[in-house]
Length: 101
Length: 421
Image 1 (tube, rainbow over the protein chains, first blue to last red):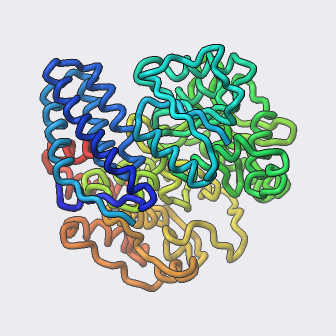
Image 2 (image 1 turned 180 degrees about the vertical axis):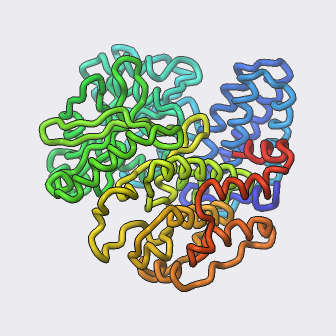
Image 3 (image 1 turned 30 degrees about the vertical axis):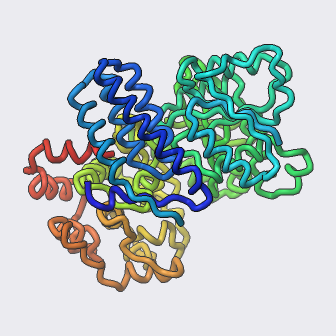
C-alpha cells in the first residue's frame, strides 16, 4: 500500500467517537486471529461482514475493503487469503494516520 | 423524537446516534444490541418510539425475521431497515415484509439517514410546508398507486428530471427491478413523450448484455412507466467517487464500454449522452449502458431541433457542442473523456459554467496524463481528437488497438489490480 492509503480524514464532529472505534478495531483484529487459529470460518465471515459495514461509515474505506476480503475468504475457506488479509489489517491499524476536518 | 436503534455493531450505533442528535438535539435514542438482548417481546413498549432503525444482519438472528415479527404488532412505529449494498433482494423482501424505508448500510450518510427519518416521522403540516418533503411524499404515493401486472412497485429510490425511479420486484420470484414513471410534465410534452417512446423502442431492439434489459412498459391511468433490470453494482459515478480507479480496472471498464458501443452502433444507434451516471454495473461486475433518452437512431428523423444541443457538457464531443450532424465518433469521444476521468480521477476539462466546459471541448488542447499513466496517452489522445477524422472511427477499431497495445500484460497483474475494489 502507498503512504496515502494509510491516511484517513474524519469529520471533526465525530472525533470523540474515534478512540472507541479504534479500540474496537484492535479487539476485532485479535478476534480475527483467534478465529483463524481455530479455523472458525463462520466467525471470520461475521467479523469480516461487520468490518465491511462499519469501516466506510467512519471514513475508513480500507477497513471495509479488508472486511470484504475476509468475508469472501471465509466463505471459500481460503486460509492463505485470510491470513494475508488479517496481516494486512494488522499492518493497516498500526500505521493508519487520522486527520480531522 | 424517540428512536430504537437495533444493530449488533457498537460503533455503528454510536455513529447513527451522533447523526440523529446532530439534527434533533433532544432526540432520545435507545441503542439495542441484539447480541445481548432477544427480540422485543409483547411487553416491550414499541408505541413509545417514533421510528425503529433495524439492521438486516443482527449477529445472531435475521433482521428480516425481526422485521416481520415487529410489524405484526399494531403498536409498531415506522421502521427504517438497513440492508447490505449489492443485495437488493433483501431490500425487496424487507419492503414486502412491511419496512417503511430502506437504506444500504455501507452507503448510509448523515444526509440520507436524516432525510429518511424526517420522511418517516414528518407530521401532515411538515409534509405540506416543505417543498422537498412534499415532492418525495407525492412520489411515494404515486408509487403506491401504480399497478403493473406481475410487478410490485415498492419504494421511491430516485427522482430525475424526466422520471421518478422506484425499486420494484417481480411478484413470482422477488427479482429486484426498477420502474421509471414519467413525470406528468413529460407526458404532456409531445416531443419529450416521443423521445421516451423512442428510447423504449430502441433499447428493446438492441438486445445486448451491455445494454439495460427492459422488462416491460405501459400506461396506468395516464402514468407511463418503463420496467427495467436493477443494477446492484450502482453506477460508474459511485465507483469513481471523485478518485481514479487502478489503470487495469479503468481499461477493463473502458473495454466493456467499447463492446457496448459496438453493439448499439451496430443497430444504428448513437447514445450521445455517455457519462458516469449512465454506465451501470451488475452484481457480477459486468457493465451496461442506460438512459437512451437523447439517443438517436441514425436512420430516423432527428427530434433535436435546429441548433438544439443535447448532452452533458463535460462529456460532449466538439461536433456536439457545435450542433453539427453526429456519427459514431461522437460516442467515441465521450468514451475517451470517461477513460481520462477513470484514469486520473479528474474531469478532462473544468469550468465555471457549462458553456465554458463546452468551449474547452471545442478549443482547448487536452491536458496530458500524469507521467505514471504515460502508456495510455496515445490511446486517450486518439479518442479525444477534436477533429473526428483523426479519431478512432468506431468501437471495433478501439478494441483492436486495446488488444494490440495492452493485452500482452500478464493476466495475473490485471487480476490482482481488479481485486483491489
